[in-house]
Image (cartoon, rainbow, N blue to C red; front, side, top):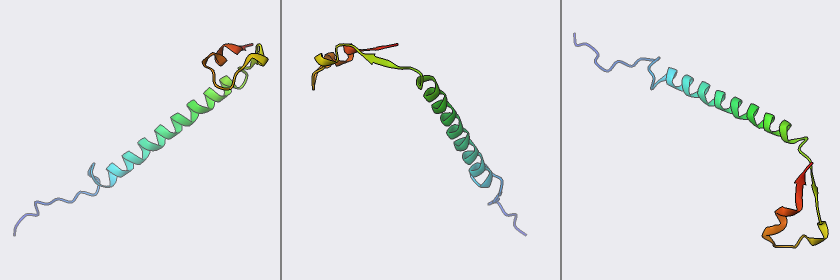
Length: 71
């Protein structure tokens, strides 16, 4: 009897186990980015700024960034 040379392994990296590894990796990346976004939001939630010379701000001007400062 001839040996089956096309071994179809269920837990091959290109099969079921590869899908599980890819899913776990994507979920880990999503969890890391979510935690990083929450940390950035919490750090900047108390980063207030105030406008200086608000009457001198023009509609389209590159110097508008000079009118605000952090407290």
